[in-house]
Length: 316
Image (cartoon, rainbow, N blue to C red):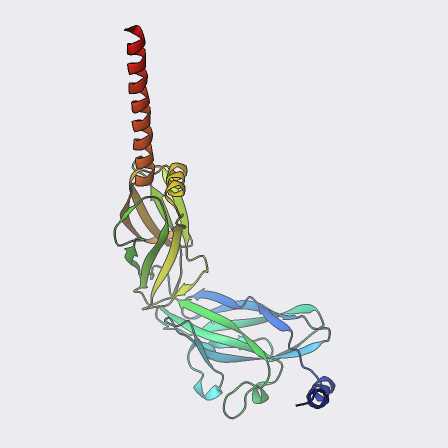
């Protein structure tokens, strides 16, 4: 294809794209996830903000949707059809179905959740969809989205007091053996939710040497992931990077200066309440530093021995 023909084809494709109107859906919600806790036969009030980052005033529309989180893959499925709304989504009342938000500003959208009487201790999920189009045109007959939209995810625990049943199933050390020259590698902590409600867990791994001195403190679940009922999740924590070379390994062991058994204590809690803990032991054997120390001591002893011989020969 000649140069002029390429230029003509490019122009034919480019000019219409420049002349057609371009839609930029610049908006968001805050917060994106709301955690709710309540008892049966009560009403909860909450609010979220719609943020319009565009240069023009916009109208936003709201609708309630089923929301089902997948504890294994992390994916979510939604269904906004009124025919399939059950349970929690039916308890939600929005203050309005639409809202005009000035350019580069935010507006609050209050809503309430009326929990019916007789609801047991359980977790429920729903979503509030925010879009640029009303509900009847936001989805076509096949259910695919036409307009840009986002969602506020709602997590509800009912009658949850004292219902957390979390178990630390396993702690996997960085190696098959629990013997390490220095703290390095990754520890895997496997946690299982054996209760009926989801948990927003916090936790830490505390390492203490034989004297009780705290040598390291690591944070678990920094991403604030929710552990759903019946789900098992593995959190990985890096104890440190491995260093290449004998001398650098010995230097690292000298900097850490950890020798002997180290108690690893995994503690999980919801807010300030500790709900699970498990311990295991690591053994830190700084053999690089030991070899260098032995060689150094050997050199010193050899030098002392030579010096003594020299002194004896001079006296004789």
